[in-house]
Length: 87
Picture 1 (tube, rainbow, N blue to C red):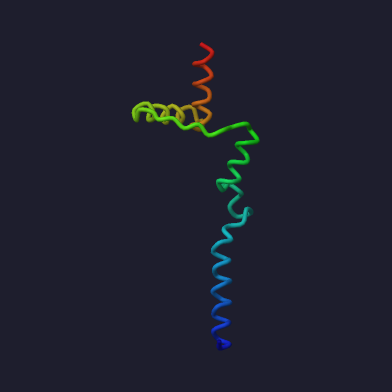
Picture 2 (picture 1 turned 30 degrees about the vertical axis):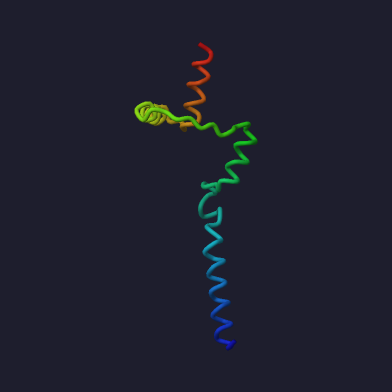
């Protein structure tokens, strides 16, 4: 290999590492978590994934209710299920 090819490959290697590195927390304010980190946080809170199939109209109503109450969908569904089971 020529010396210029070695430098070219080194440059490509550095570019690849920079693209994979992502944005440091100080710039992104640590707002977005990857799936593994989110899963760990959920497990610490005692949460488990629970998938259900809902009517599209009911799902839309839940989304609008979550927006009006300024809650996440998880918190809203948790609240509604707890109230329903208590009744």
